[in-house]
Length: 103
Image (cartoon, rainbow, N blue to C red; front, side, top):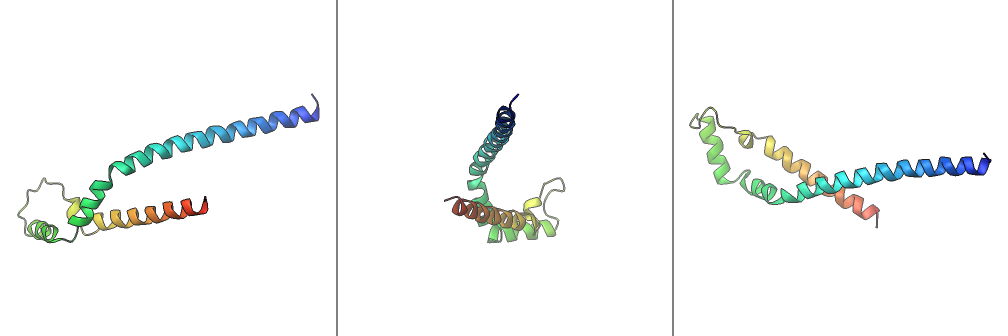
């Protein structure tokens, strides 16, 4: 086989790998973005709840042992919602930066 054909075949194989990898990543990212868009209301509601008077009351009642023992209460931890909101803001900034560099 001529050198040109060998190089051509290698190039096409490399491009095919890139196409497959990029296509897969775009599909996964699109799916993740759909899920991310679906939780925007939940994030906004958590942001409003965290630190408001209702959250402080719920937290105080939990500390006083007034809530059921089997109640999941991650939302009352001082770190869970804070960490989520921090991660959210960092992700938004990262996405903005990405979009800006691709213009």
